[in-house]
Length: 101
Image: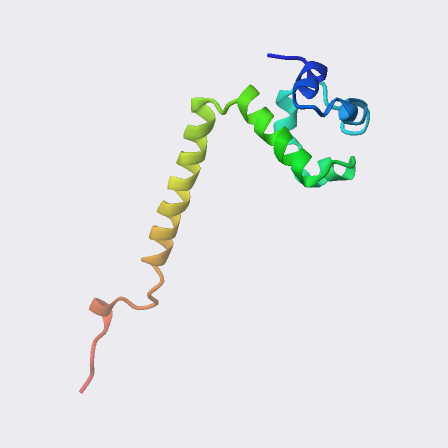
């Protein structure tokens, strides 16, 4: 993996190197995944520069299969909880209703 300076040079964003290291305390390219767009724009990056940085990060540090699996399992868990919750909302089950005459 490239070091941060070399990475930023390839992305034509080398002039942000000092700001990323001092203000955001970044030491590696992988740490750029944890930085949100607002933090980057606070450094003075334009939206096209942020998009370009994200594209380069995606190429340099692709998601691992484990990360993708965690995302899918989290989604499946949410679907399961929604299914269980939506099917237990009836206050009285229809079979428990007794009519008196």
